[in-house]
Length: 415
Ligand code: PMP
Image (cartoon, rainbow, N blue to C red; front, top):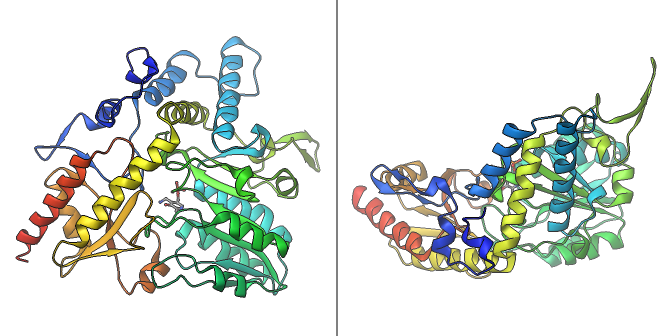
């Protein structure tokens, strides 16, 4: 990192920062790459790539097992990453479980907590804007326990309707599951208000932070949530690593998802006892390189500053939303203001896959599809949409390229 502009302790420009991302130093279909798909997965800075390579090259050992020097170094680096990542989300290290990402984290709660605690007739509150990863696990938990899913509708603008949420609570409400930031609408949900309402009823709040932790300063202890899930690959870290935060009392009443090595205290022929939290939730050899890479990612994000990143991505998304709205035949989804780092849209008469294809031919990467949010697509009365998502390596020139690219889509399809 000594050559990095970040190491100098200055505030590098966004263009300078983009040079930290090797994937951006390429052309795609003859054009400099404009990467607008960070909500699916982010690019990785050199610092993260180096940290992962260093582990594999210099100390590729298992953790919490052998006593030799390399194993000690691996264990130290893995636990240092836990401390660093926990600090990044305002948590204590022993409340952070390393998982392979948001999906596994939510499944751990759905299997380990919900199946143990939900009774027939209990209610789970959700919104129709949830990603399938924060929806299907609850459908399955409800099926297994006899609990019911209760959906709280959004306002016509696509925001959480707090009055409707308040009205949806009953004596049987046991769990509220919702995203911190929607991966389609870009809305940020008022988690503190939700927690206040839920805790009055002794309901547990599970937050899907996949789209918030990469973009906003997040403190799980300030938010007061019971469980909080996130993915490393969306925040400059490697794939296959993420986390679940749980309040200590909640983790203590959660069953493990994976049984086997690493997660036990004692085993005899008939039974076993579990290691302490969080190790009892990390059965088998963990993703050591991933955790170390995620540690490097949060160190990188911290050096840039989460407040700066939040303001930057939000400004780009807002500008893109306003300019796309003015293009003929383009519909932008989600509220007109307070948009987080993404904009979801459709071009009248053109399938979003075709939109993405024509943009790709100009070196612009966007996502097209249902964004793993089919109930929300049904609410919006569409099959699919295109989505441009922004991060710290994007610039205003990228917004210009997107707008020009969409004009080209219009010309291509004779609009
Ligand atoms: N929730 C939201 C809001 C997401 O955007 C995503 C990723 N698209 C997920 C959950 C699932 O994350 P992962 O695939 O990393 O488990």
